[in-house]
Image (cartoon, rainbow, N blue to C red; front, top):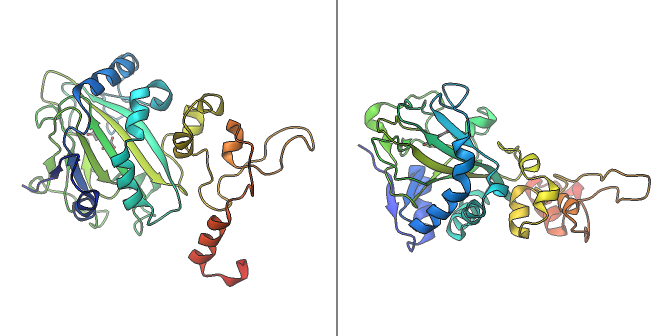
Length: 300
Ligand SMILES: O=C(O)CCC(=O)C(=O)O
């Protein structure tokens, strides 16, 4: 059976990145401690407990998915900004974009009896158009132990460059067994899916994913955390949500109001009260990157 490589938190990020590129997934064991998980769950369990089971087979008729976690949980905010995870995102995603963004936050609870989910690629959220880039890097933090019996995520190591229509067979599939506080880091290209929960208790995981800044987010962060709520967050987190330009000219808006009251063009962070807008379309560096990328001298 193929295996997912396990790392300790103090291992070199470059070794983790190599394994992520080769296998499509790694596990970092017990990256956060039991108290962190307990505190986070005390914030999120009340929301999870009242979340209804999924509406279809893929989401899971015996599964719950609870989102909007940026505002609901300080513990989730810490995990979103985990320094090691962001270092891995830098190494993996900045090859394809100027900025990456938070793609979704979701607590996935597999209840006893939940069958295994169809094996899939997360990048299919954008159809099959993005075969030439790695559009996202994902985490599932174990909020309970993940075991073969309770539905630990099934993963197909080494499947990142498979054609979209290849079906994994059982000997190619392993499971992300890990203790609570550990995190599975996996790409948008690796085939995977939730496992079957054959146990008598819930398997609970926190899915936090990051995508290229020029793509549509799966969880609409502007509606889940609208400006009046996002205002209170740290600047780095605001930018991760998307309250920053995706790249030159990508994401500006025109604040509503009578003629002359507001700037005609403002970057998203203006909506949070950051009034020093400079060139609202982006910095000179952003523009230079665009010109470099297109090789189009006429833009200069
Ligand atoms: O819950 C899991 O282990 C994986 C879920 C998943 O891959 C999905 O819902 O896209």
